[in-house]
Each structure stands twice: as C-alpha cells, then as structure tokens.
Image (cartoon, rainbow, N blue to C red; front, top):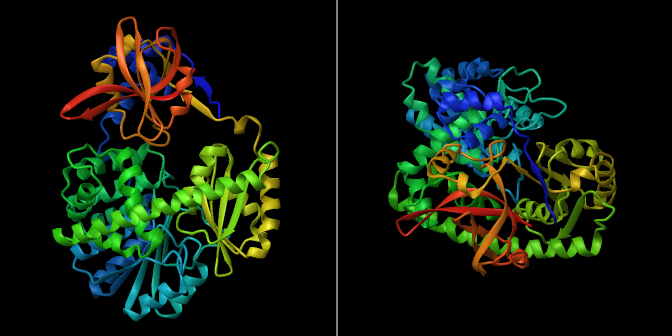
Length: 565
C-alpha cells in the first residue's frame, strides 16, 4: 500500500532562532521541538527532564478522597482487600502493584484475574463469589469495572464494598460503588485523561501514601510496573504518562525486581537497554501470552515473587506460551486474510468484519491489528466459541471504533473499550445484521482521505545534518510512543552504495551516501521494495528514523527506513 508523505511545515524562523540561542541546540532539533509544541526554555526542560514534581495531585481525580477514606478504614480494621484485575499487561501490572503495596502495608490482600476464555473481560459473578469466599469486605477493581453495574450490586448484597479503578469509557450508567476512579468520567476534572489502568491505580497508591504520610519511595518503587503496563497499553506518552514511563524505564533497566529480571533474561534482552520498543515487542507479548492462552495469574505471581528460582520457572513458562501464541497468531492471520479475499470488497467497503468458529478468542485482538496494517480499514474479528461470538475491534486514525460499536449496540450483548481498540460479545445469529450496521457507520464516517495511509515527516534534511550531537539529543526525545513518536526525516537524491540485500524475514539492508556521508540503512519487512534501489544513481528519496544499533560492544548510527521512492 503506497504511503502518502506529509512533511511538516517549516516553523517560524524567529521562534527557531530563540530556541537555538536558549538551548544551544542545532537548528534541526529546534525545528522539530517547535513543530511538536515545545517553544520555550521551560517547556524544553519539562520535556527533556521529566520530574516527579510534574505529577498532578491524585486528589484531583473524582472520588479519590472517598476511595482513600474507605481503604484507610480497611487498613485500620484489618479487613481483607480483594484486587480484581484484567488479563492483559495493563491489568496484570496494576494487580501486581496493588497487591505488593498492600502487602507492604501489612494488609491481608488477595488478587483475582478472570479467565479470558470462561469469563471474558470485566467484573464477573464468579469473581465476586471468589471475593466473598475469601472473606473480603473491600474489592478494588483495576483496569476494569466501569461497566460492572450488576456485579457491584451483587458484591454489595454479599457485604462487599467496591472501589472501581479504571480508564475505559463509562457506559450509560455507572456502578453504585463506594468510589469510581476514572479520569474519563464526564464529571472528573482531572487534568490528564489518558492514564492507563495501571496509571490510575498508581494515583490511588499515591493518594493513600499521602494520606498516611508515608515516604514517597513507598509508592515510587512501583513505577517500573507502571511503565510496563502503560507502554504495553499504547497510551499517549505525553504529560503524566511521559513522567511515569521515563522514570519506570530507568527502574526496569536497573533490573531490581526479580520477575522483570527473569523475563528480560529469558527473552534474550540481557545487557540491552530496555526502551518502549523492547517492552511492546518483546516483554509485553510474553506477559500477555499466559492470559491469552490460559491463566494470567501466573504473570502476577512472576511480578510479585521475591524468589529468583520461582521467577525463572514462571518466565520459562511464559516463553513457551508466547511461542504457542505466535503459532496460533500466524495460523489465524493467514485464515483472516483468506476470508478478506473471499468475503470482502475493499473497493467499496470501509471496514472489515470477520467471524469464524474455532478461532481462539485470546489472539484475535493481535490478529485484528495485523489485518488493519494489511488492509488499512477498521477491523473486527469475532471468534465463535460455545454459542457466543467474542470480538476484538481495532481502528485507524480518525475513526472512533468505540463510538461505532455504541451506534450498533442493539445487535450486541455487550461491548467496551476506547477510541482505537474495543471488545464485544454477540449472538452468532446477529453477526450479519451487526456487520451490515457497522459497515453503514463506517461508510458514513470514513472518508476517502482517511483510507490513505500517511507517514508524517518532521523535517527534510541532508545526511550531513546527522551529527553525533543531533543523535545524542534525539535519543533524549524518548520514551517514544503515541503522540511522541521517534522523529521521522526525509532525505532526497541519495546514492545506494554496494549491493542491497534481503536479510532475515524479508528485511532490506543497504548503505546510502550523500556528499561523502555514508550510513547503514535497514527496512524491516520492506524486502518487497528491493526493486526501488539502484546502486550508482543519486535518485533515492528515503523516509527514515535515526537510531543507534548496539552490536558486539560497538554502537553505530543506523537509519531505519519507513519508505523509499
């Protein structure tokens, strides 16, 4: 699929000159910063040096005072606290964090993660019964619960108070809980709405720590778990999330937590710097795998254990589960592409809805994301199991898939999520009617322009501008993620040096030269573009990001290609 190149406008020269003078940075860096809304010395300092003091007061979250009051009472009376999580990395890290925090305070605490296959997402009747059987008087949900109206009623009837800690969009009504912590509540004035589930839970332990006058390290020590869950949940890495993820990655790289150390070792990342890319593509899939294919509580045990041997044992299980998951992924993905070819008319249809008996509901979210990359349309995949369709929805920019599901809600048993990703359940007999309704919504709201995949370019530069100082400063733009992606550059009329080749699984490897400057270039999964490389001619335009490749105790600048012409 051809990408549309969109180069950022040249920023105001006077603003650029002021920033160059204040920061003593190259013009290229100043231009990129200004185009990202960073125009003053103070804003640059906040960007490059995220600080604990940049975090907001946790009591600005609606109901935080009520939540802390109820927890304080539980701590004083020795009530058992029951942490109810979710089976993805966000929910697993939030569950682990709260469990460790309450253990640290000496409170009796238990945790529960629902089984994806049996119970599905969110609060469940079975989970509430578990809390009652354990003698819990207070249930705290993390990364779920905002739509659990009936389950909170059930808990109340069993003498259990509930605190909801969530970050998903509320439904029509809200549970009758003691407190509902969710920045996306319409009546919540919290200044930052994009915390992950683990981020909201972190604000809760920050609030408890403040109320009890505990040392700040009491809650800060868990920021590695916050970084893991927030990065895996693909939340915008701006504002408060930037502080939490940057501080958390520092802790992850110290490998102080035995479970994280075991995971890093088993996944082959020993002696490597762990950034957001390593979390998203290496660590998070392994944590997710046990929840997708079995019992996610094993991942919680990995993150809360202090036993080196137990952590290694669990990490090895995660490794095996992740390989199994990848095998199922690939089979399902090929199956999905076959269905797209036989059932979809991509010339006319603006969305893809696929359904099949026998698909594993634990992997369809991952596969839906891969289908979106392939067809660049909002995609829903529905696995039909035991007479119920379980669906995962993934979107493209400028299409709110949660709102689209809401518009088709009459056909669904239930749904939840946010703008770019959501889940749903449906009776198999209603799938055709739902598909028709969803396609209608997409037809009305997805423009021709929205179906053109775009690459946004921060600046057009010559290779001579890639200096050691520029690379060093670009590295400090990290952590990278949504709304703070690694800067993208365009260089024109490059020479291809030597013979380009395909390495690994369809990766393109070659060298480029301009005015005597030579750089290694690699295009992951871009082997099909080999024909665009003509050695000896200064005719290559290339879009890329600048990275450092660490290999065999040497570090070299490498240009990671996004597109070629």
